[in-house]
Image 1 (cartoon, protein in one colour):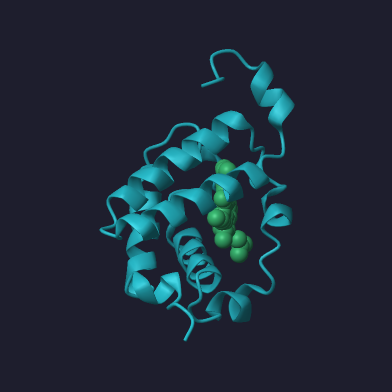
Image 2: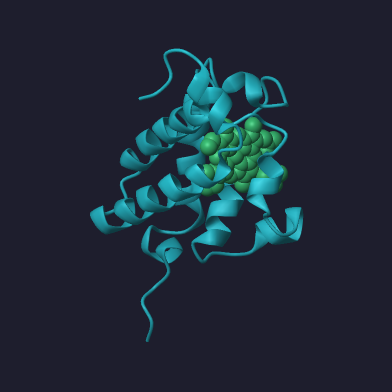
Length: 137
Ligand code: HEM
């Protein structure tokens, strides 16, 4: 028998809904990231898309695919300018959400490792952000 998917190990859909809730609660207060989100005050649709994507990625139901098609995440992010600063802000909120999630150590580590790589892959404006003052980190 192969090991249970991370989706199963963390308890399924509710875990990812709560993770996305926590993440987007952070986004709602973020002066760098909040303006990027196209639907104004209403982050609920974006929150749902993130939760369903993560569910699918970690081995749960493929509702995301049914509703949105193939993820093509990097292509879907090209409308938004994502430099080092935006990546770091995104990762900050995701780290807080993962650490508050109640997942076990191994699962938290897997989630952090994936998010670090995925967030790097979404950067599409590195040079511009590196040139702006006070960014770095
Ligand atoms: C690195 C910084 C990132 C920024 C600034 C960013 C920003 C955004 C924005 C502005 C949207 C549009 C909101 C909406 O869905 O209406 C979006 C969509 C989305 N993002 Fe990100 N994102 C980042 C990284 C990531 C990463 C690392 C993942 C996955 C692990 C991710 C997953 C998604 C998903 C699933 C959607 C919805 C795609 C769709 O079905 O249309 N994002 N993101």
